[in-house]
Length: 74
Image (tube, rainbow, N blue to C red; front, side, top):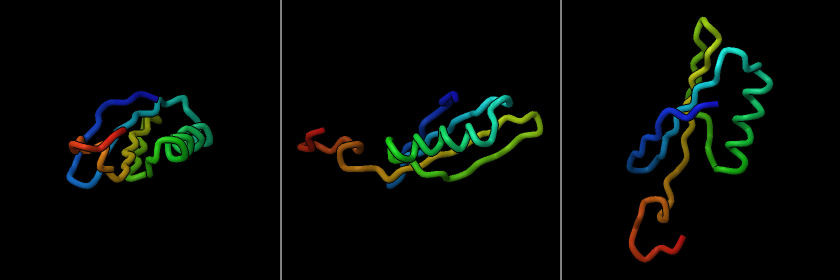
């Protein structure tokens, strides 16, 4: 799984992942479940390309600490 970019919006933080063609559907599900469970991400969008590559967008709500507000202790 490779991380290509992170996009920060007002309320949401997005992360794009690319899964190579050799990754099975079960393995992809397991990897994304781990991201959701331990890092707070949820599935936003999945695209499956003809070569077997999957591009996945994950998102999570921004917290006050992640927004970099002064006075918030991380």
